[in-house]
Image: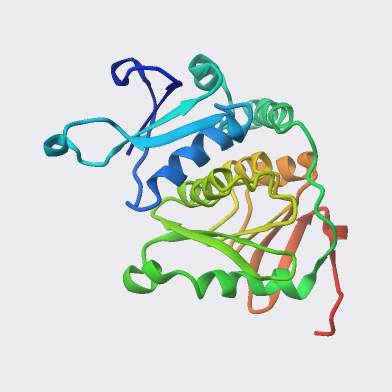
Length: 250
């Protein structure tokens, strides 16, 4: 799917190609909205005025081009210069964290979360993965309340796309920032997932596998709790473990 962006009033021919991603069809508008939010393309989610498929004639429409129009100017060159996703080494990694810290504006404000809730999130996410049950080949991301109630779950062949879809859903619903929400992901927690969660205002991220060292460093700097290896009722808390407490008897 191709994502094109431009200010309101921009003709289709003048929109700028922002990104092309391999995605699982479905929730395309959420994916596009989430991408422009989590990559810092728009300063505020409310600046998104419209999300639509490209205005091609019906006989040419393949629903693979999505356009996002914003109420504010869009600095695409800034996106091309940013280092959010060029984070494979320590040198650019520090610059990546610095860039996200500036773009996030503030630290997450999530309060204490019961450890039993955190431990149960992977199973709760797995229970909502309908496409995975049929194919065995899709990732998922889910938003949950601090009590463990499911708010939104999205699936995609790409882990980052799944996160963009749930954050895009929240953006289009006017629910950002996601201060009182937890994010569960079906795979490992990469730096990019931490970055996207931070841009959405999420204070706790849990994955079923290991986090990368850069993800841990970013989560700690950004004030997020990052948990991994969440399975069989257990998990490892790598950053800000004080937010995870025992409120109910195991």
